[in-house]
Amino acid sequence: MIPDSNSYFSVPHSFNAYLSLWDASKGLPSEDELKDMQSVGLKLLTEVKSLEASCLLQLRNLDNDAKAVVDFLKLQSRKVDLVLQHVLEKEVQEGKHVKGNQFGGSGINITSSFELTPGQYYKTHIYLHAEVVALLCICQVMQCHQIPQDDDSAPQWQCELEFSQILEDDIEQLVKASLAVQQKMLKKRKQHIDKQRR
Image (cartoon, rainbow, N blue to C red):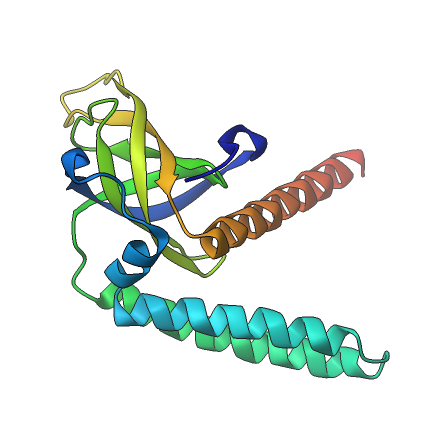
């Protein structure tokens, strides 16, 4: 369970997620049970990212000459992460596909082609391409409302889901990813303002 989910902020970002209805009568899985539910590919990506973070942290403590080595290793590790994530997404996905609009350390916001009922739980796979994050968690639907349509297009729903069970490492990944996305947004905004001033 998440101790204080309100302490995390969310950022707008497009991503893919897959939802499978979770039987609430079974109760929420423990952390170990959640780990057991991960595919081999997902376990591998999590392990690789954890090892990378640990090694890069140790290298940063070396002198200034190590900066070039650290930058090179970051590039190599990103290539490995991208390949692993690509392989993961090519696996046969369990659940219904939805488009993510916003994410943070406490939950996600999605657009769905089907209605979700507040209070329901979903086993959720999340894939953030730009930040190379892939994870499995259990989410609870907090709210869901139909998006008004101007034409005869298929109905869509905007839904807010909160993490009910997620691994600590995955929360850390999401928080880091949300900070990285925010940093990119601020950089783009600054470039736009600088361009207007010229």
